[in-house]
Image (cartoon, rainbow, N blue to C red; front, side, top):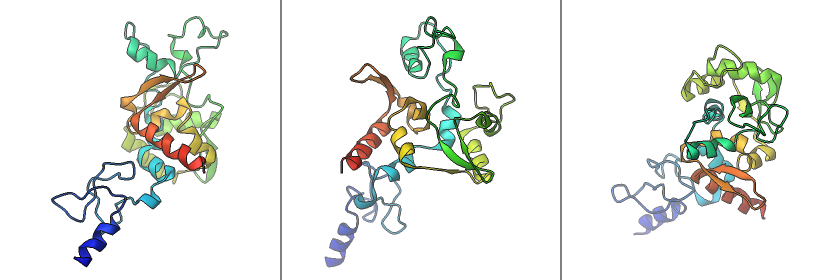
Amino acid sequence: MIRRLIILLLIVGCDLLQEEDVYGCTDKDACNFNTDANIFDNTCIYAETCNYMTYASHHWNFSRWIHDYYKWYEYKEGNDDWNAIREVFINNSDSTTGCLQDPTQGHCYVDIWDHSHKVEFTYDGSIMSSSSEEFKEVFKDLCGNNNTWDTDCSNTVDEVENSLISKSVYVIKDHHFYEGIQKYNMYFAGWDDNDLVVVVTKEHGDKNATSPNQITYRSLWVDYNKK
């Protein structure tokens, strides 16, 4: 009886026990990421270690961000739901390129390297920024594209990931990174549930793409930064 009580105490933060496996933990809360987790192989995520950084490492991915960045590039005539999502990723205030007058054009979709915010990472032994001219060539190579202006990523997410591993890429996850992935639309493609995207209008009229996992992350990030 005492031994069973000890086991139950060990899995606090892993939610309820599965009936078929008294040592397992289920994926019913924000702290659990693996439905096959058990208390013996460190796959249970305990409450005290479940913070916004842990959550981001399981749900936001650099290779997915690269692969899916241009996912909403196409303007679809008559598809208001799709175009409303696309709208948050375009530059619809630039009159010099006509995007203010006609945001349906492809060039109005902001390129991944044309943001004031950025992802910094190591690449071939140097630190590189996603907001740089050099990143155009890196994006082309990682995606297996023929040209720097191609918007479809020819490689799969796994192939992009394998390329990043071969280059020993390490994403620099500083405060700006962790703040940005819950705040700015440019980072949205990196979330693993970006297919569940919805657009919300904020207090001052700004529109943001969001998803269940991003919302959970934002809650964890805000709670931590209130301390």
